[in-house]
Length: 96
Image (cartoon, rainbow, N blue to C red; front, side, top):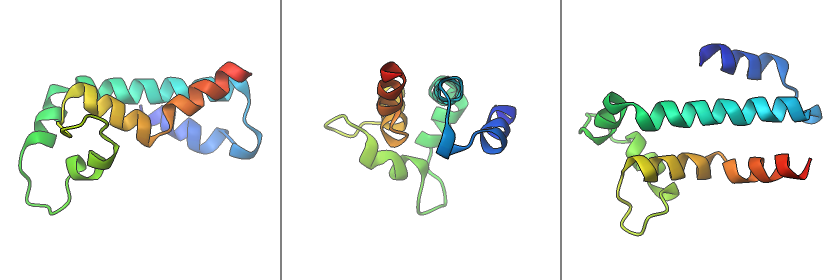
């Protein structure tokens, strides 16, 4: 995952993005979302109480689309996609 982010940082110019680069961005986001939503230890860490005032759960809460703001794998997946404008990227790729 680190090498993907290094590539994105070093080799992709936002001013002149290509279809191949857009696909790479979307694939990286897919991998990140899968990694985060399927890692049991990570999900347990989010659910656990921490000593910090601001937790990831609190930061993502405005992006959780469920009515009761329940924090599940599915709501985390939807929150991350909404935060990253994932659907707009998919729509943009479809237009190309």
